[in-house]
Length: 146
Image 1 (cartoon, rainbow, N blue to C red):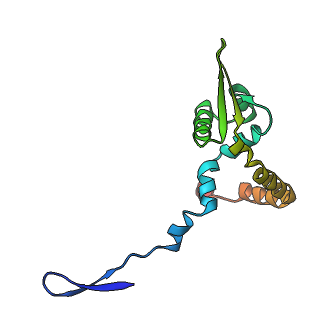
Image 2: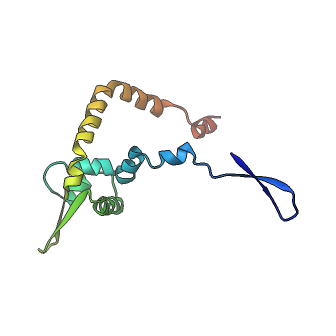
Image 3: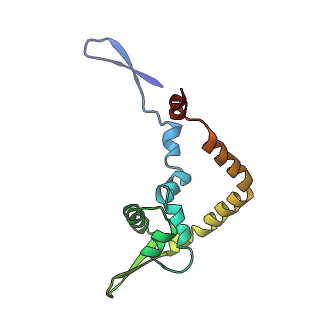
C-alpha cells in the first residue's frame, strides 16, 4: 500500500504505509513464546531430569555431561527466572542446593511425554538421518581431500 504525499517543492512522492508482515505476527505465536522459555540445547534436558524428585547441582551436572558448570548455571538461572524451576538452598555446611520443577514446570510434562512418544515412534528414521548427517561430506572435508 502506498500513499501519495508532496514534499516542500511540490514534487509528488510515494511512501509506504504501515504494513504488518505475517512473519512479524508469527513472532507472537504460542509456539514461539513457548520456545523463548524452553529453547536451547540444554533446557529440555534439564526439565526432563527434574521431572521426579528434587536434584542437586552436582547430580544434574553428572547426568547432563558434557555440559559445563558455567552453562548449567546459566540455564538453571534462566529456568528459575522464567518460573519453570525452584531453587532451594539449605543452610548447611557444605552448602546444599536442590532444583525441582514448579507447578508451571510440571505443566510442561504432557508436552514432554508427547515429545518422548514421537521420538520413540520415529527412532529408526531419526537414527538414519543422524547417520546420514555424520557421513555427509562437508566443505572442509572436501577441501582437505583435494
